Length: 281
Figure 1 (cartoon, rainbow, N blue to C red):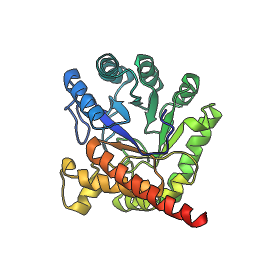
Figure 2 (figure 1 turned 30 degrees about the horizontal axis):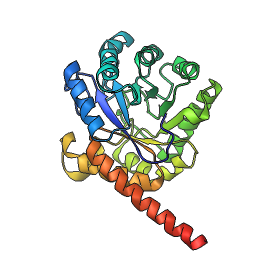
Figure 3 (figure 1 turned 45 degrees about the vertical axis):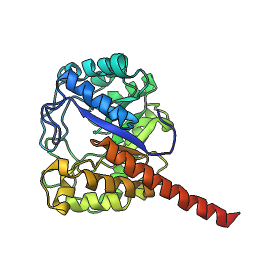
């Protein structure tokens, strides 16, 4: 697990036919390897590999199907590209996570926060694996069917508290838990914006925070575009702002652009901290 507090870029590698932005592009192992190599060249810190689309309305994919999609790619990356780059398995199923880690993955990214398959928590503890616990309202199939919150920030925080407590009870080390407010997962536009405006409250929990805004639809409604690939700059803007709020992990499609945004924002943040410290000495 990357322990530095500097920005950590997690690159998305969906080996699915139906993901919202890049579905079908990397189902071929050669294409997946080329994309992974491009990510490495552009400064990615973690490669996040998923075999099930979690876009709104997506149908669930069996463990066997996910394994058939992700394992050859994980093994190929380890053999052809890097033996050391951290690889995250994006799944909610313990069987998939177990198989992926045995094949060379090093951490788990669970968009259900341990809700779909609670066995994934005991597995993470057993394997001593870092795990991302994300907030999602309902399932991928149903999450955008009239989501509603009285206070989205406090409700998401409360759910994440339950999830992190369950992880601790399963004997996962606190230092291995990362939380994700789940932008776009059962959220309206105003909910996503409220969460982004209050990321500091998630940082204040003491757990590292992962942000996943990459190319998401709510930003398209602000920028007057329906094409996800046109939201690279919008994503980079959220990356820069989130760094100022203390977020550490960023799950993105576009590595180079978000790496630049993250590094510049981090440099500015460090300059501000250094100035403040000089006043105290």
